[in-house]
Image (cartoon, rainbow, N blue to C red):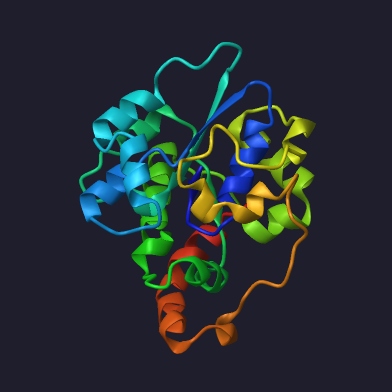
Length: 236
């Protein structure tokens, strides 16, 4: 699942993690991204200590044998972690899906956690590139889900996604236990407060719009919107 930040990506990981047949992995390229960029995110040192920072080692781990009784591997990937020079050929060995949210809503949420946000950090340009790469290989658009649609009717949205991926829908995906999970990245205390308090998808609420943003974030949203609209045209 190719996601941007602040985009119910962790709730989606919770949903698949609630399946008895599914093993989940949380942002496996995060340490590699931090090591390559030098960016000072919250819990940087802990993340670098917890994950391999060599992209090739990350890729190898993604295709290691699954734990016993697990037949499905859900990988939560942040598109902005996939820096230029990181190999993406491995994506042909996986089924790829895309989770999107309007850039205004993403920016409003992200800025509350990390003020120095920019266009690349919200992942939409890279998400569009990876989408185009997958679509060209498949000869058709890979599945796209939009955050408000999932929140409005989780069962319907997840059923559509499972059908598109050739996976049987499991009602267990609609609820999960609260708290930090063992499969969460070490950075969870800095970023996952809302999902840690949840037991299912939140009720939909008003999404932030352009008028809600300061001018600096409006300019980023304006640049991000064409990438978002390209993917949104193919949503399930």
